Image 1 (cartoon, rainbow, N blue to C red):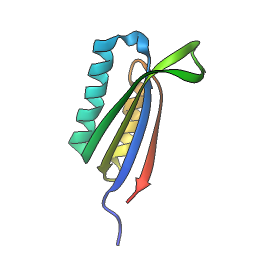
Image 2: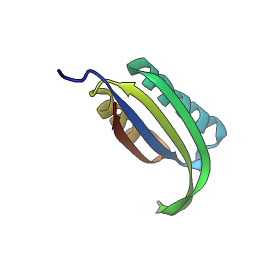
Image 3: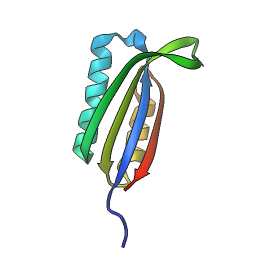
Length: 98
């Protein structure tokens, strides 16, 4: 029997130069998107941290961890939206399984 949904985690790093309001709006945007297409959405904001290596000459980023349950098609769409979002430095989506 095929699985209908899986648990996923996404970690993304935002440019802290966006400012507090823009960062909060972006985090809320992705939370709302995950709630539309999945369930059990949890967002853990790690805040501003030093990067392991410079990305575009920047040494700090605003880290956010989000976990959710959804069907297999949504993470591909989420990855596309993360890639075209202004201020997004890096993102990674991982399937945790059941």
